[in-house]
Length: 337
Picture: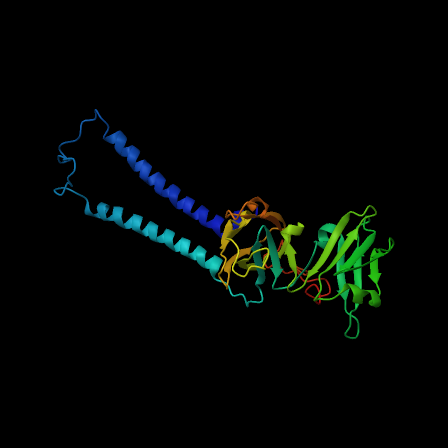
C-alpha cells in the first residue's frame, strides 16, 4: 500500500512508538501503586511518614526522582515537537525550479478537477513486464529519426499512434517482432509539443503496452473521466487554484475545495481569491491507480468531485529502483524528448 511509507505514516509510527513506551511506564507504575497500596494492606509506618491528603510530604521526599518526573516528560514532548516539525519540512520544503521536481497545476471547478502539466512527462509501461519496448532511434542527421516497436510478446500484433487528432498505425512483423514506421509518417506522430500516444494491441484490440508523451500545458479533466498521470520516485509539487466552471461572471471566484489524495495521507484546500494558489507535495514510489477526492463540501454536486491518479515510470526509469533511473541498453536515458 502506498501510504505505508509516506512521511505521515512514518510520523504516525514514531508517535505510536513513544505513546506505547509512555503508556507502559505510566500504567505499569499505576498498577504497581494500586497493588502495593490497595485497601487492606497495612503501610510500613517505620519508613513512611504520615501522608495527609492534599499536602506535599515536604519532610521526606526524593528530589532526584521528582526532578526526573518533570524533566523526562518535557524531553519527550520536545522530541515529539521536533519530529512533527521535521515532517512539515519534508512536505513543504521544495523548490519548483528544481529539475528533479515535477510541477502540476490543479484547478478545482464546479464540479470536476483539471490537471495541467507545467512540466512535460513521457512514460511507457515496463518493457520487462509487457515484453514490448517503444523507442525513437535518431537518424544520422538531425531529424525525426525512426520509430521502432520491438516485441518479444507473441500476442503483440498491431501498433496505433496518435498526435492530437491525427492517428496512424502499422503491424509488427511476426518473425522479427519489430514494427517500424517510415520518416514521413513519424512526422505525423512525433512532436514534443503535442499530446502523443502509442498503443500496442493484440489481434482482438486489447492494449498490451502504452507509450505516452504529455507536453507542457496539456490538461486532463476528471469531467472527461481522464486520469492524472504522475511519475514515480520523483517529488511532485501541486499548485492549486479554485475557479468557477463558467468565467462569465468576474465577481464570482469559485468555491472552496480540498484536494485529497487518501493513499498519501495528504490534502490541501483550494481557496478562491488567492492569486498564488496553495501548494502540496507528494512522492510516489509504487505504480498503480489511486483515488482523488474532494474533502470540502463545495455544493450540491460535491459527490462528483472525484478522480484518479495513475503512477507510472517516466521513460528511462524503473519504479522498482531507489533512484528511479534505469539506463537503457544503448546507454541513453530513455528518449530524446
